[in-house]
Length: 203
View 1 (cartoon, rainbow, N blue to C red):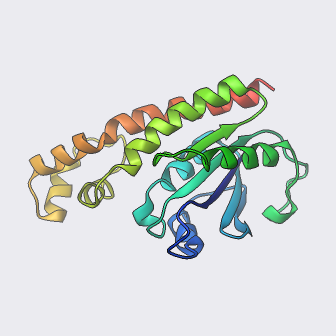
View 2 (cartoon, rainbow, N blue to C red):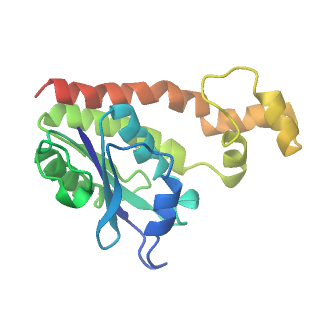
């Protein structure tokens, strides 16, 4: 299982957890996101791709309450049977997630995402890939996001329709995609998920 812990990095603006949860409402966890303590939320996922999606979504501060977030992904077993609420979750996966988010809190740049689990080498490799992706996501401009939000990864021939919807040229759409490294991000996401999956298999 993949336990994701997220807490608020910028606290001066006040509690932004409700906005974060709204931004993540499309996620499909095994155990739903819930506030656990203070400005922290947690959820459990059965697939590594889902953990990657959520972790990177939290890097987009403009959509998550206008503040930055720390993300910790813990890979490890949880108590069976799985409960329906986070407050009842037990197991090493929860411990690893807590360690990961504590490590993320000490990261100084925008990519405050970390991974922990029984295999420290694989955890470090997964975190390295995720941090590169997180830097890409966190560095995008509002104008770039206006374009990217209308795109579906892996679908060809979208640029003309996006340009028409936004009232800009297809060339401007193409440039925004290139600057945002949109295609490179989605090409690299499976690598991060693969490393997380290997951590489960290595137990």
